[in-house]
Length: 190
Image 1 (tube, rainbow, N blue to C red):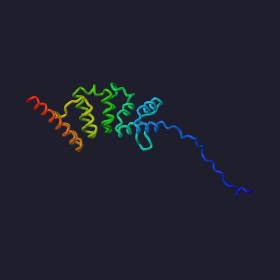
Image 2: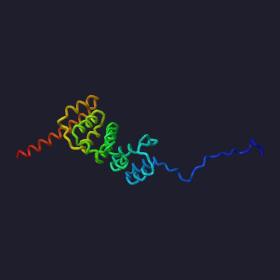
Image 3: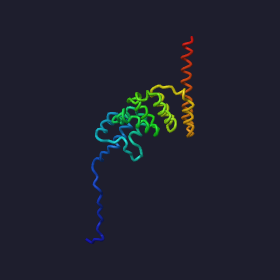
Image 4: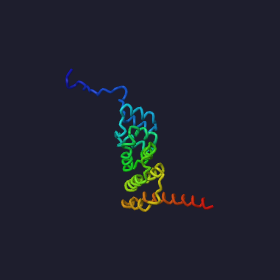
């Protein structure tokens, strides 16, 4: 047989019967499915909560976007709240991750924010670079300190960057606080 008439042979790369295990993909799927137990298991196996998928999201991004508070708490479990919790909170505020803010507050960071001056500073930062969701999370899950006495300052900071949505949210929160205080006064006055 002639070399020119022989059929060419192609060599395909070896393909395993089962696709390989991708721990990052598995962690993302567990976050999508709200499977906290699987998240814990994968983290114990060495999964990285900050590893980016092909879509450009980390597992923490996925859990935050889907409001999976229990999953976010599992992803944040290795964080030492006392030592680095405030830093994590600052990152969450800057990145607009309201579910992460809620999780950190529920995991014990709320105790540190009982200091009114510290909370006011964190809230000012949220007014400056945060979102309405972050501001609402700080008010709803935070230490319960009043916003209305400092409304003008918070609104001014938000408006400095033309963050009108946050400024409107602060005004709404302050209005609700004032109405609730007036109701308390009316009840006592009866």
